[in-house]
Length: 278
Ligand code: DGL
Image 1 (cartoon, rainbow, N blue to C red):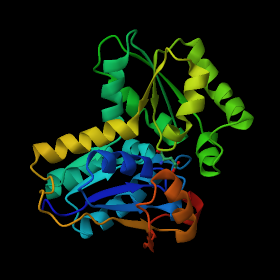
Image 2: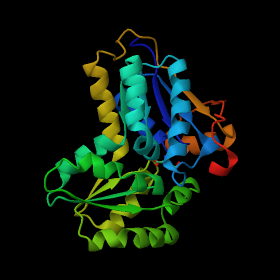
Image 3: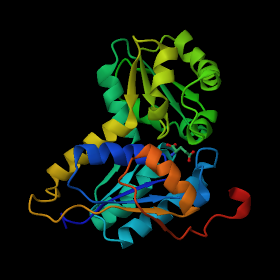
Image 4: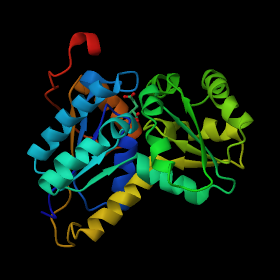
């Protein structure tokens, strides 16, 4: 089992920031990455729709024989985490790491004042998943802000310059007013905006990337469950699957992850979502 790949999924290319962080910490591991680009973006969709899409993709990864699942998408983590643990961890003994809890834990450790901000998609903010994750932490106040235009800007490659600066100021000013000292980047795409977000928030605000924290959790989980690939394992092999247009995925993927993405396969998009819900 330890030589099996890690299954990572996201609504599209954004989760490749998590895959990048995982490969940086665990270069001997193989991954299968599914980007559900046929249904992307998840962020504006109702939570029930995101839940059913996410389960379909995770079922496909489990059928491929992965040794663990990583929900690299914040919107999907927020929508499906509880169901996923029941279905795969309790049901099949597969460990699952998602992006919300690791980032919430790091934010609590980093904050000096207990005033924490989180930015994410509308689905993530509506789910209140970060509020739930932080509910038991004493002395913490959480302030959430949806930043729907950020995803599109990142996918257009607009991560610096006046346009993104204007949008960032509009979204982040309320959090500056609220005097947060720590800000969770609660969306796969936002690590690529760390420059402009840090510039607007100021140096004294600590940014927490859910990608980095999740990768550390993947590392911890593999060690704890004795699932690390051995030193004599064959070289790792990675597979990248897109349920939508492979060419678009491929060109964006190289920006998000790098040269490891050499070939993109076409995956089957689930048919469980009706046109009206898309
Ligand atoms: N991957 C999504 C997330 O982290 C962002 C893109 C989308 O809305 O699908 O929430």
